Image (tube, rainbow, N blue to C red; front, top):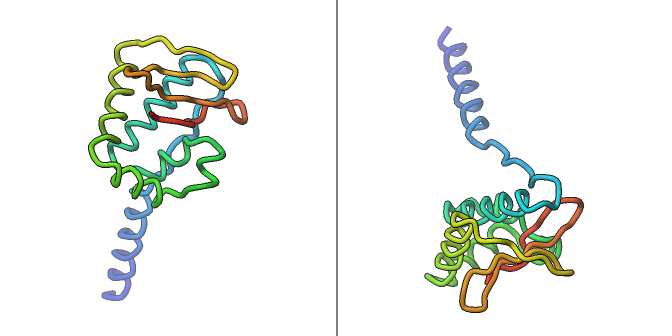
Length: 132
């Protein structure tokens, strides 16, 4: 009986551990403004929360190929306050309803000082390509 209870406790603990590691949703399909805003918002929230696997999944193909979630974490943390400030500027502009501008390279969200966030369309969805 003792072995059965121990096995049951181990099974419950394993199930709870797996339940905590929920996968994050894929980027929304489509290349409209609402999808662009959602991807960019999810990206900066993931960075701010330290969910670098989720943020990495929202990057453009070129950045996903050249990086990894742990590398993104090192880069973000290594940039010091500038990285958090850039993410905060993006979040603030999104919340304020700042209009997006379209160009042949993708969609930009101006964040002030001649800087912007750039999203590119890949596979029918927006991906983050730059956060200046």
